[in-house]
Image 1 (tube, rainbow, N blue to C red):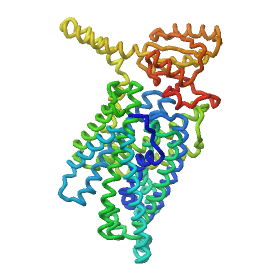
Image 2 (cartoon, rainbow, N blue to C red; image 1 turned 180 degrees about the horizontal axis):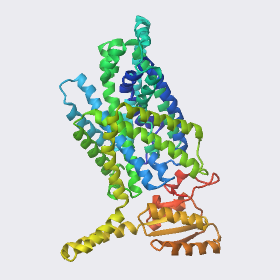
Image 3 (cartoon, helix red, strand yellow; image 1 turned 30 degrees about the vertical axis):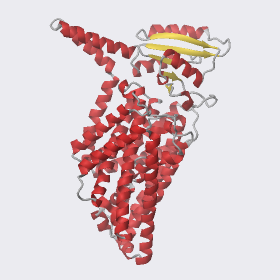
Length: 579
């Protein structure tokens, strides 16, 4: 995806904002179904939890401003396998969000044009947005911005019409609603309402997955803007519904509550307007999924978790193979479920909440393992703990309420994670295949010879890729950790250990002795030591060495820099922190 045109505050907010603000189309009704007249309170508590996550995300992405979200922070604080689990959950969340949003949008469209086929229209919509995102992110952001502006206007108009309706007709409906008993009591209803209402912040994590496409300093502003929108719109929308409609009618019309609310407060014109807005903003949420997953899968591919052919870019700078892969996955899910949203909701619910928990855990790991890394803000340990507990509680509430969701989630998640772990272990698999082929060579000589050649070529291609570790003359304990990380996380047999020296500086004799010890301790990895003289470690040197050695920057490692480091991690172009 092209990085020549960075996204402005409004454009970036619109891309992820369409997803998070489209939630009011369904979350108000769902929350009222559990929390009744106190749904607005449950949604306010969610806004409070989201306020905590603003600093959690701000600290993590401020310290590591690279695409990938939860995957990125775990990659830089733990192992590739742990990061891959978070990536799987994020992709599942995007996949189900895309299909649900597209299908819901076409259900609203069917309300305007009853003759259309929802299934065919959903396929057409998913295809149209594939072509839009392939064109260029900057162009698709214009579409997102128009949709976002219209949606905010529509929601404020609907809330305003609700206030006018109450002023005109009085509080009789509201009075009856607030005297109605709550099933299971106040606290149980509030907890279940809160658990359901947490689904109304899906999309908050999206901005972290395309942070590299945003102008400097914009990311934290997108978090603030999304939080303001959710805090204002969602509780007010639920309160408006409770003030205008009997709770029984809210539950009966939960599929299209807001257009029903519009018909009651403003007439058929407002209901139609809200339906048109719903079609557009849910389509915008589909755009968010495409943009977010593109940034994540591209990062995973650069890290050699996924096949390298996915990186091929078109003349517009987008990655059509990544987008086509996601498009095929979305269509397959649509066909497998026959457009039934229930099973998809289960996958989406659990995936999204687990991604939020992973991000909170990533923040803890960043504090523990990368404490010296500069960051623009700090979330307190207590606030991170409260946020994680709150999301874990919401996850528990959803699983208890819909136990079948967990089974459906596992049916999608387990195959996905098995595929990822097979890809991570592909060098070991190729070695076993080579052994098997050698056993078969007695009976199938030609087949074995061709297979052996093909497998050996692929194995060599995987293991011959060089990696680089930049050292300041670290002691043997640090260098040993580097070797352990490379051995456990990377498919390679070649590592350059590089020291960048100013003027006529030199490294100690002890350091050179330590390197010899390492070379003997790790016989499977060829260590090459390189001194770069009369240079300063920084973005220019990294870029020059990357071009000269033909080694991608994301295959280069450093230990965590201190707050006295002259550059931001984001300036280094994707160098990974491993110590």
